[in-house]
Image (cartoon, rainbow, N blue to C red):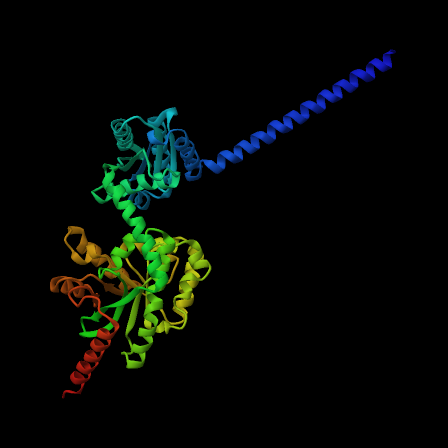
Length: 466
């Protein structure tokens, strides 16, 4: 072989080696990009912990290996919203990052930690006893409550914790996380800053609620949800000015579930949507009949929009369909920030369209005032805690909301008024639209028609007197 042949062979080998190296670098870069994408899909960007998707995948793997010894903890920071509102979202985000690091350290390499969303975190570990599970929960709660400096201020935040310990009747990851969430809700109901374990009593309640929800869906299919009407008065004028449409489920055994009990049964957002639409659908013929009967000019029916719903409810017309064929000038729609936030754009569009057709929009609670800048409203409806006025802060809150309503040209209303003292206190702050046990419990459409007739006769008699 001559020199040129040797040089050509060397060049060929070098070229092949270079091509192989370039291809290997490309494959490594591609794998790195793919790994980065997979990591982003399964992890929370803010804290670096797993996100809900990643956590459910890891939990599924744990349950498949040893579900009987798997423990799940669900944690929620107490009153985190107040920190966000006071110090701003940047400070709130920094606090979440600090809490995320503390949870990750507390769990260690043997467990999986995740930020499920907002200020909610979850942990999964393979456990051997309820005592061990409780000790993990206590350790995490102690680590979270340690003071932290945020925006130049020393903050101390507590956590409510729900613990779910195997074995499970339903070992799907979504169900197991749901068990821990139920224990968390119990901890919050009992005062927060505490640990509750999903036990046999909650299991029995969960089974019963699941069966009740299935039966409720069947009742919705059969049209068994009946509308009742809670009278609403203008106490300054002494006139009947409206009625809130509320749902009643009259069961085959004769028992009756009211709207609050129904919302306890209806845990799935789709069931809540169907319930809200069904009560309006069933009320439609009564509304038309009452309109023909003759209603006062300013009489309005108050309708609760779903307390929970899926984004498609706003987007695809499920909520809008409930109002087809109704005189919108007779309706007041009660909304919450939570239900609007599911799809703010389409919610704002639909509510604006309904208002243009004559409907009024009311916010149900003080906590919903944050949406005043995104949707147009006509009324603020006071919460029961403010109506009751037992806390020192309630008078200040009532005065502040009354001033806000006056400045914005909004009506002020209140439900669940139970005493004359409460009613007088509300009137002193300009709240004349009232309903609740003091003015009568929910009644049938026939009883409402009779009440409307009595009010009209009474009003005509008083105006005809010299």
